[in-house]
Image (cartoon, rainbow, N blue to C red; front, side, top):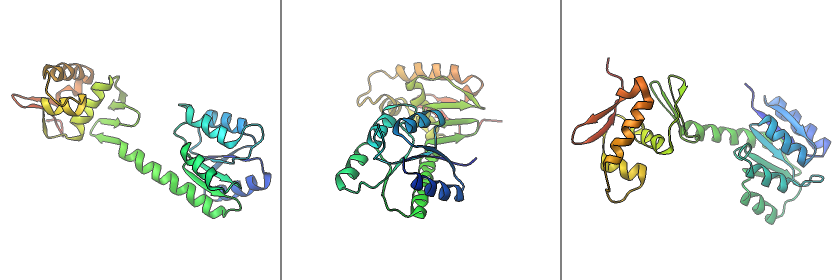
Length: 229
């Protein structure tokens, strides 16, 4: 599947140039000529990246950027500013608002394409690091999601953090004190029964996979790296 890029710019020559080079590099390209149109397209199409001009009619690129970052639907979409405004104050404002890269006109189309490619490559590396797969378990730490054999589990935040701690150090025995510190943030041990209660609830939700969490008597809990035959 090709990566999609939304170009929000009201200069036809710039749009045609950017679209041509992105197409040549294998991207699918969508275009919006106004800020409002770009905002709507971002919410509807959810592109992999957005190239955004600052000087747009009716709604400026800065206003579009603020709206993108304020919406849960679009806040994580990477944005590259492409503009004739080259002042340092404009760059700083864009960076403060969460822009991912900033390129001024006139520009090299090849450089723009490379910046988009590098940006998406870095994001894929971050996303890959946030996903942990252990046998039938797939855990996405960024989105607080976990699935077992493709079936998503509905866990509380504490249950999720508890399972993350066990999965990341699978094969090792974690004491109740360690889990209280890592999951609950307790500096001093208050009541280790809290851990036992949450482990019990977690096992209930894991169903057939519950036996992956084993109790080490007098020590704590361990996540089995491999299910026993």
